[in-house]
Image (cartoon, rainbow, N blue to C red; front, side, top):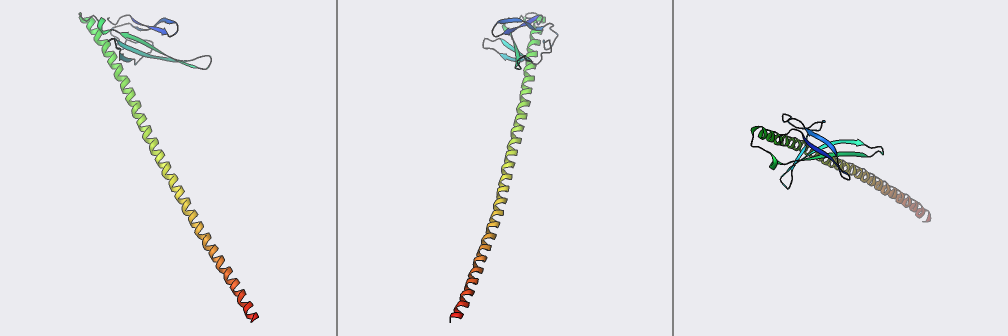
Length: 179
């Protein structure tokens, strides 16, 4: 495998192959990818082959749904002919491109993970602040209600005391008149 004219086939799950989509045309091309498809995801398969997945593009369908296509190609390191210098360089450049792509994906995922960690920390902080604020509001409401209750109890006790004095004065006048 020398990196020239390597093709991947577009596969439809129901109908099988539907045509070539991806083409590596030059061993000097560092990514080997045309048609604006960049950053492939590289994975090692159980049989020792290297799988490369290119994310495609999304399409809005007539019914309003959204389709997203992903493309897959395998590289078979066991089939690399590295006995000649040119073939070895081609194999190394393919592996380098795959590793570079893998590093880009890892960096992208690391950045996403970091952003998610900050979002979680920010949301946790906001939830804590809301909880504290709610507690302060409830404490302030409780203090205001306690003050109002004490005031009303004092007014009620004063009213009862005045009524008792008024009734006592009335009883004193009656006892003087009777007596």
